[in-house]
Image (cartoon, rainbow, N blue to C red; front, side):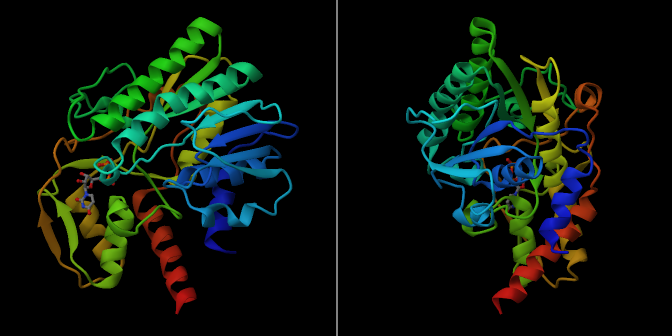
Length: 339
Ligand code: UDP
């Protein structure tokens, strides 16, 4: 069994009895890291899937294997531009947005547009089709918070004019738009706040990679691991299979219109600990290099997942070590394929 098909088994085995046969689903940002896993899972659950992407940060190779699948179709489209779709849809997942902190400097307007104008465009599709809508918001709406574990009722501590403002405020505006459509038009809009998620297909390339794929690539190459700041800042890392399972449970649950739910792994680790764990798991001889901490980098991130447990019957199953081992195995496999 390939790594990927084991990942798919992890997602699907706990989704019983959710079934998407004769249901049609639009996934904006469907060629991204999370979007492509979602499209594949929905196809396996029987849905007809319309994957929409403009490859701003999504990648064609993420959906190459889906193109020949029955029920899959692709629309090349920027979500921030007005669009129509040919067939009716029953569900809309709105994921389209760049999400890496290192893109906030280069693409702030694009990020603002996809989460505000883009969210409105996607909400219009949901409204016209009477579809259930799920907006993928983020733990970033809490900013540099001061309540841990952080519940959905916390309103956040965001710097609107800081470097992360384009993402944080755009997601906050996207949430407000969902609630406006819900209150004014009765649209069944739901909001998930995604905490740091990692796994196969996450970009590790260049400066846009996130911390886990970057550290793994650095450790595999024998390069120093680049810790920003002193590494005492924390994150709680969720494996992709747990995250995707949570998203599907959320959109298919009953009576959840207007609900906000955190989905993330409630085990908090420091970036220093993460670096050491990756070096140990790879038996790497890499050292550590300390670089300046980017401005407004949140000091802690830890979700309160009580609501996800209660409303979705969801909790994560894959520990950080297990997830890291799986990702390392996948990257090793890819490297040997390229040799
Ligand atoms: N980070 C780091 N070295 C890197 C990349 C990231 O120390 O090479 C830190 C970053 O400053 C942050 C954490 O790792 O504190 C997580 O960063 P990531 O970009 O994955 O996502 P974030 O949680 O900041 O949105």
